Image (cartoon, rainbow, N blue to C red; front, side, top):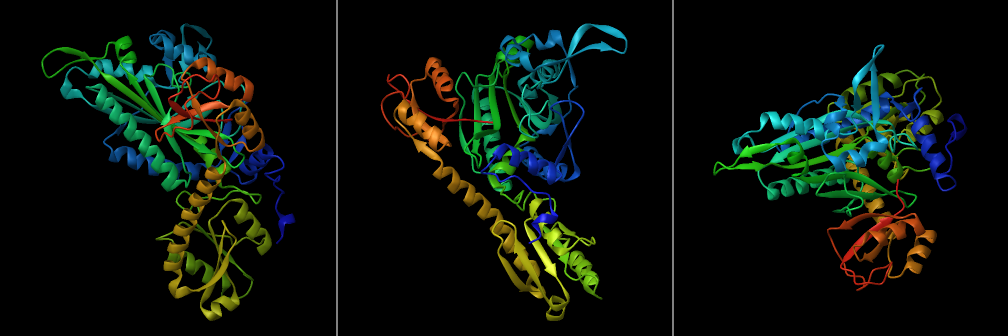
Length: 476
């Protein structure tokens, strides 16, 4: 190995935060911009986002939703219409106060989310039950003025999709909320190979202005949790504030029931932290911009580069295939491809050409094998499927190993300090206990999982009767 040819990456078990920063910069996913907390998403990072976006957009459209686009700026008076909503977002809002040299008569908010814009529009276009459901989604950027930032995980500006829908009944809105959470879970597990826990947020942690919030939570390599997607039943709060009404099937005026749901570029941060290792990125094949990288060995010898390019031509209809024909040494190329997380490296040299074979090297396990060129397409298909499955299985085993059930606060604190990860504990439902747990342990409630188990009869914090199992963790 020629590790010294590639810039060193901090050991992840020595300093996980520095490892993460090293990886996102050295794998050329992002660069810092001149605005604090804002990131330039470089081509390799954006290609990953495009692959995620394309997979999710396909599912969103398959469930009957249409893509739209709302304005970037929101008048302050519009934002003030839903009281809980503005209170929840007030500390993170960025304001436009001037247009050119003139001070604006009314401040404009750069969207932190678009509920109020959709609500204003829905009021104008919904009149009858025949206009329902309205199933809209937008791909956009948003700005939230975060105090502490880190590329992908928490930035002032990020990319996402936000779905906003209107329905006749609360049951319809509930079914939409569940359906879209399942779409997010599928994208995480099938596309990104990240296992998730599905559940409901507590009242304290739910989206500002929502009736309730459903979430998918994932566990990172360092034992911290990451909220990976949320789906909110907004009830009728926004609809009443904005007057979104319709004539029902009996000719009576009713208020619509709404949902909203979002999935962001922070999921790339989750993917990095779930699958990465000391060599850098490990990308699931489904989202990898390059699934197979061809590295010619002894490429100065006659016929080697020609054979490499012929292979690329033969494979590119089925796989995303790259080729490194630079004048760097093979050891450098190997390390660079590993740092970028490319799932399979394909090596071909004079002897391989002579024997009509190639060497395949897996990024996830480092396993190397020689295969006949005649079977290459089939072998690559199987290999990429196996890598995808292995990454999911490995992440699931990590989560299982790092999930601990506790019955007392002493056990809670001890387990969190020693092991980290997901802490399962019973909760009485009082916010006072939720606040005390956060104050004493820095762990927050991640979700009330849909799959419940009765660990004990009493709350882990106060000892009163408890009906709900909650998953707690320190989180990003």
